[in-house]
Length: 431
Image (cartoon, rainbow, N blue to C red; front, side, top):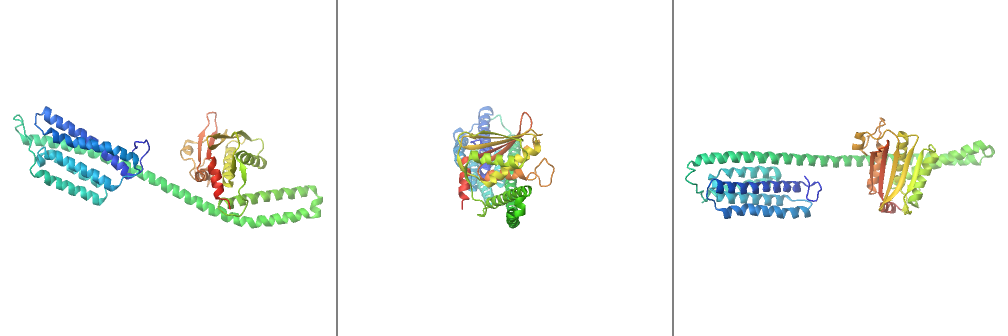
């Protein structure tokens, strides 16, 4: 069900009101056609003024409902009940001036009752039942009889024909209504399933965060011990005299320091004050640092970086964003070991980072489920968590991630992040 603004309705009340509006337009058209056919074709003299009042009122209510649906995000059960009571009253008004209970179209009250039972809460459904019952009693009291022309001398046959038409009308409207309601229920179930999926993903993130934080705490002690031991070794005269051994010790100290930086970043991302404080930098220095770190610790000559950002902007770097960006580059290198292209540009107030490769590209099912956990083309247990973390980290920062296959071959992952979101998120994490 699409609203007047072109967006999909998610509120059940709005969906049901749209359904009532559509049924009411069908009722207005059917009433006008029936009045015209009976009066002008069959020659039965009808009180046209009171009979035309009901469809005009219903049309006016429909026209007034459109602005209401545009302004409101939700429609209450009370409003739906009042709308259906108006429909019941309009039908009773029409039947009063066309023979009352002798009119075969009195069975249309059953359609009102079924509609109320499907769209309204239980107490409101019984209200519609009561209103329909009172309407039947009311039209049985002093109805306006039909003045049949001499050519229609068999009222019973006329009643049977009207009953058949009424049955066909009720059957068609019920099918239309029930299929629409069933579609609304399916859409509601799909929306609920999406909410549950997101809740499960967020719960999964929390569990992984707890696991990572616990592991970081456990690794902190042995890393500190290694740093102290390597410092003692470096000060030993025998090690200092051996240049090769001294270089090896220095390299080990650098790697230990790098591990401590990663652990500090994990703890900081989990909201703990321990570790390196957020770094005030710029977009260009932040991206240059990510690229330089990747080139220094991995294959050289593989990464092709193009800086198209323009005038630099001051930000506060986020360790989590640094980690997931490096993870995206790692995934691209696994698919395309010979070349990976990274480019940055500014689109309005957004930072756009694109990571491209010359690998086999994404499978259609991967693109359809981009960012969902355990969706991976690597065929490894636990695969697909890198892109899952990327999507969820960007979501918390107000950004988005998308993927596509390049026309010249390979895949492309596009990261879009509001510049103020980086600063705002980092300011909130400042101790």
